[in-house]
Length: 297
Image 1 (cartoon, rainbow, N blue to C red):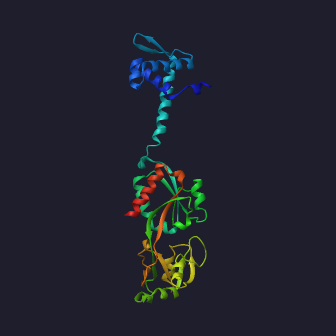
Image 2 (tube, helix red, strand yellow):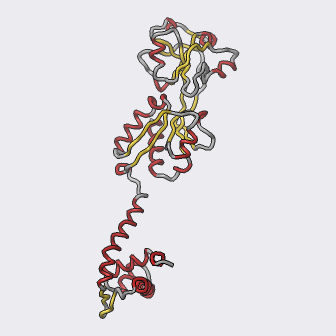
Image 3 (tube, one colour):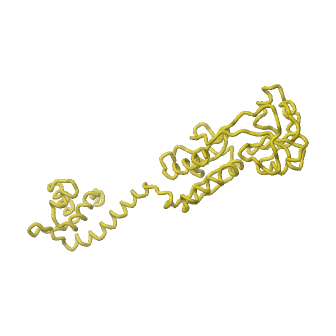
C-alpha cells in the first residue's frame, strides 16, 4: 500500500489539533475520541513519516521541525477539503454557473421576461443561455447535458423525461382589430370555414393542434397558411383576412382582437422538462422553483 493510501483525514485533523493544543487529552476531548485513540493515530503518523513528530515534555507535546512543516501544508489541505463541502451549500446570490434552456417562441414571450427578471434579481451571477427549441431532439439534448431545461408542450417531450406542468393555457380565436368580423357572433362552423393561419413551430405543414377538435364536431378547418413563429402571427393577421387560434397569455396585442364565438377550444399544458440526472442539483431545483413561482403569479 502506498503512503498516500495509508493517510486519512482523521490523522490530518489529529496532527493539526496537536500543533494547536500540544496536549493529547485536550485533543481527545476536542475530537470526541479517547486519548488512546489519539495516541494510535499519532503512532500511524510517526510510522508513515518516519519521524517522532511530537516529543513529550511533561504534559506538553513539542512538535519536531517536520511536524511544523507538515502543519503548514495540512491546514491548507483541510481548508481545501472543507471548501468541497461548501459547494453543496447553495446560495442563489453567490452562485456562479451556466444554465441552458431550450424554449419555444411562445415560452420566450409568455414565460421568460418575468422569470429572467426574478433570476437577475436573486441570482445575478448566474448565466443563462436560451436556445431554439428542437422538438425532434429535446430528449437526447436533456440526457446529454447540452440542455438543462426545456419549456414547451407535452407532445414534444419523450416519456422518459421528467416534467412539471407550469400552467394550463388556452387558444383564443383572433383576427385583425380592423376585421369586419369583430362585430359578428360566429359559430364554430363559421370559424371552420374562414381562412386560417396556424402556428407550427415543429413541422412545416398545414396542420394545427385543434384539427382533431374540429373533426370531432364534423368540421374541417380551412387552413391556408402555416408559419413557425407565434411572434409573427399578429403582424400577418393584421394585414390579411385570416383568423388564428392564439395563446391567451400572449394577449392583448394591439394588432389582433378575440372574435365572438360560441365555444372555447380545449385547454393545453405548458411544461418545464428536465432529465433525472439533475434531480438533486440545487441550482436546478432553484430554477424549477422559480419557474413555478413566476407561473403561479
